[in-house]
Image (cartoon, rainbow, N blue to C red; front, side, top):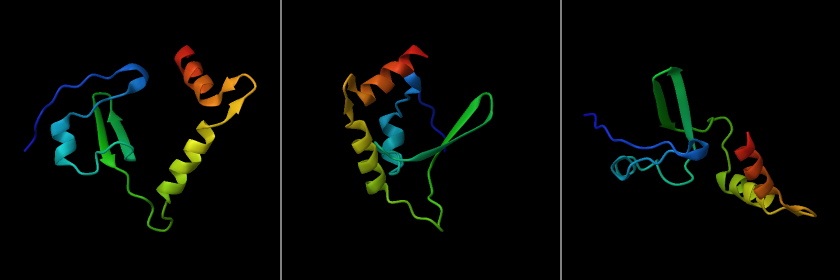
Length: 90
């Protein structure tokens, strides 16, 4: 059974998945890793990411590394803030 919902793509390509869909799919949570497929110009498919069986990914370690890199502050300010502002310019 297929249900249709309307959502808006916001700045920087952010898409909010409606509550009903997130409730029906336990993998659609904040910070979930997903695979996005676009084989045709009028369709985007979002699936839960499946780690390579041969090489398991330590997601806790990965998120800690991301948080660590975001924490860097230089003489001219916060690196994360600089990157976010730079993205807005392009």
